[in-house]
Length: 305
Ligand SMILES: [Zn+2]
Image (cartoon, rainbow, N blue to C red; front, side, top):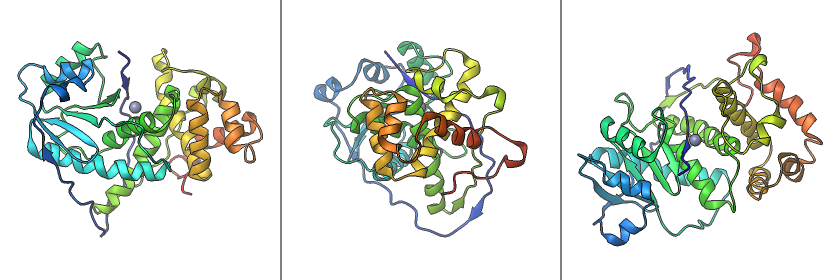
């Protein structure tokens, strides 16, 4: 089974400023009686999750998701985040019409032992954090400080949305780049509605660690060289920020669909952004300028448009 995972690179050095705005409304959830028909809709990993030892699962649903949980407050918190981000991300990416009729399954673990048990049973790496795989989102026990209120949910949800709304599949770098870009953008925006203003400095790589665009975009999968993993996530995020925040969302959606159709990066870029970037070399020039750290520009925002 291919697990699409992500690593946490917490690079927040956030200034916290209280502001007044409306919080998202809590989402209504309904209890769900679990039966064979529901069980059939799960993947083998989902079935393994529900069979993990020493966990008494309860089941509930909101408009677009089915949840498996043990503690009521957890499912209430997760459902509100899920439905709120789902609407925001779809709107931002200008995508409509879910091709999938089966709702996404969300597994909310509250025990570390049960989580580790699942990861070992599904063959994942022991350091795997939350992940999305084939219409299922798996959330580990949340940190006590701010449970379910970080970038995890919007990140995994973006993977789900790309899966549901695009024909075909985008390569791993683009999938992670969009997930990180959407997670940062909307997490910061949603924090504002909860009264917290975050400043997130742009992520950078050093010149020595810079991976050329041609190499980054030629790969279909995650880098096998762990040294390159951080650059992979950072550059993918910045590349998506550059494309998504530089032009209209329609351009970006066209680019995404072209990539999901199996087109090479240069052709997809030409199709959606040809009038802006006449060649990959021109694009790379601008990209390098934005992504390679220089002491004097560290911490300054380069993506404030
Ligand atoms: Zn991811």
